[in-house]
Image 1 (cartoon, rainbow, N blue to C red):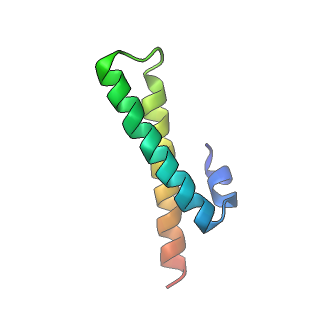
Image 2: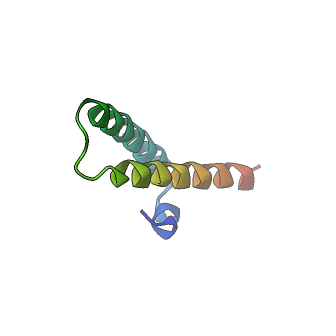
Length: 65
């Protein structure tokens, strides 16, 4: 997910998407620990997407003050 796509989402959608992606990340890491994933770089991509969403939420929070 690119930063432009993250900025298009409303705050509520962004929070919901962030919760979903965090759950997917935890599940993916657990599955990778049990049996290696076919493409482990997916974990890195998902972690960066979560960071982008958190950054956007924080920027919105600071702009609203």
